[in-house]
Structures are given as C-alpha cells and as structure tokens.
Length: 198
Image (cartoon, rainbow, N blue to C red; front, side):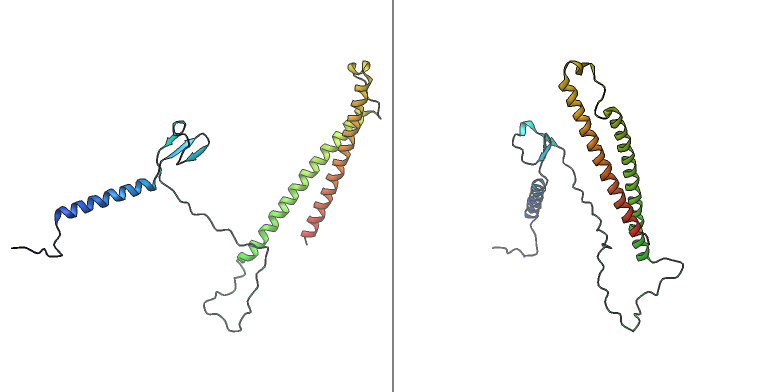
C-alpha cells in the first residue's frame, strides 16, 4: 500500500537542508560582496598585482553620507509667471513690516561679502604698493645713478662690476613696472567699488 504525502505537509529533513543551503548561499554572496581590500603603497585595491607586497586591510562597514544640495543661484533671474487677479487661498500673506523677507536678506548678503572682499583686496594692493616703493627707493640709492660702489672682487674684474650694474638697472625697471601695475589695479578696484555702492 502506497501513501501519498499531502502537499502542505513538510518533511523536516528537507526543510533543514533547504535552510542550510540558503544560509550557505547568502554567506557566500555576502563574502563576494565584501571583498578584501589591500593597501599597496599609496594605492588601495581589491585585486593587487603583487599580493606579497600589499597589506590586507580589516573589513569595514560602508558608510554613505548624503550631501547637501547647492543653493539656487541668485545671479540668473528666473521668469516670473503672470499673476492672476484672484487671491490664492493657500498662499501666505505679505511679510509683516517687522520681519525682512528672506529674498531681501539673501540679495544683500553677497553684496556685503563682495564689498568686504574688495576692501580686503585694496588693503593688500596698498601694502604691496608700499613695499614696492620702498624697494625702489633702496634700489635707486644703491644704483647711485649708474655708478654703485665697487666690491673688492670687482676691482680686478671690471666685467663683474658691469654685470652687477646691469642687473641693478633691470631690477629698478622691473620694480617700476610692478608699481605701475599695482597702481592700475588699485585704481580699477576703487572704480569697481564706487560703481557698486549707490
């Protein structure tokens, strides 16, 4: 007499082996997903060319940090849709007189930051201009109208003296060009700042 097993009745041996198989399969997939990482000098890899020269790193959990979205640009104005004459019931009323609107605050902030940067740039340019002028005064004094004092090594070798005089003249010309460019930049920055302020 043959017995027919009911389809809903489960055999305990088969269930245990199926669970064991699924556990082994998931462990294998996890091991494959989390491969070993090696440090080979300055390089980090999971497939080193020379495993003997590389150092295996301890497995670590992967952390994902959500970034922030960039703020919308205030430089490009967007088109304003036409307003209907009917009031929108979901829209908030106009801001009260005591609280400034966020758009006005956001629009003022870059102007303030830009004016601070401009003032800082003018200060740096002024300091560099003062340094260049002091350097020019020192170079002109030591140049002595093309006849600087001779050094001991230059008394025997007149060519060394002439080379040093030529280098001093070139340094004076270079410093004068630096002063001119710093003055032009300072005038340009001042003009830009006066255009920005109403």
